[in-house]
Length: 308
Image (cartoon, rainbow, N blue to C red; front, side, top):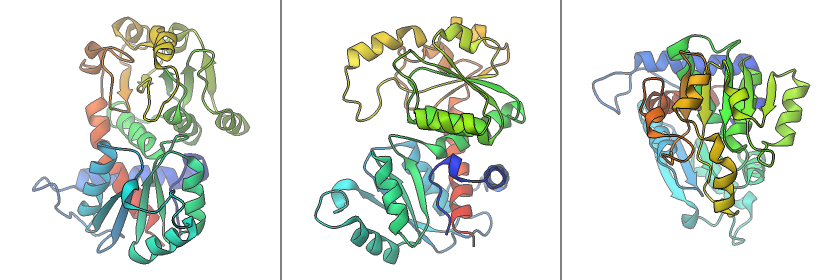
């Protein structure tokens, strides 16, 4: 049984195969309609259960449509629809019910440990749709988008700009697994996970921390960013925005990167906070292609999870 929980847990060769399959399926997808099944898959006649503790636009749309294009079906449940996490039923009992009714599960939750606990109890594959610690599906789409426009990401230099959050953690893991360098440009008190940084160091990853954002983006091939205020962020919002103000991706900052550098954003974006509209809607931005590629990445992930 194959779970897709974190990029660091999947062998490099397998990740490269998933990425190649995402590209291949994108090229094969019929233009006749959004739910046309273009070719056979391991998901044919299977059911994907999607569980959301956190709201979503791209994750829900991309996974739902991905399963349909693979020939399967979906059911969506929100946290209020379930006993999970409410103390009314053990997670083990919930896992047995889920395993009995579904073929594969996508879980978008807050606590990463809840995802890990569920993965140990399910008898079917589990996909991490996002936790407070990581967002591996997003990074597969990001790598795919970069390579679609600029060729292999191997040996490239990427800058992460803003808050050291869950997506930053997955970006560091992606840098190691796909062999590119990443500059983490964050204020002093906004570092990503020490556990992830230590893992990257143990794998000889090319990861550098910059507190001067201009130094960090100098000569990079790609700038990535995310919202400064994430869902469930209960800290001092005003202070956080003030601390991150100089880390806004604007035309001046983008001009310091390589001339043909591209810009990626996880979405949704808080325009004029972490990124200006001039960058987000500008010629170097790939954010809409990046969002579209979530669909094709999810198809490859689902197909891989259901392969024997």
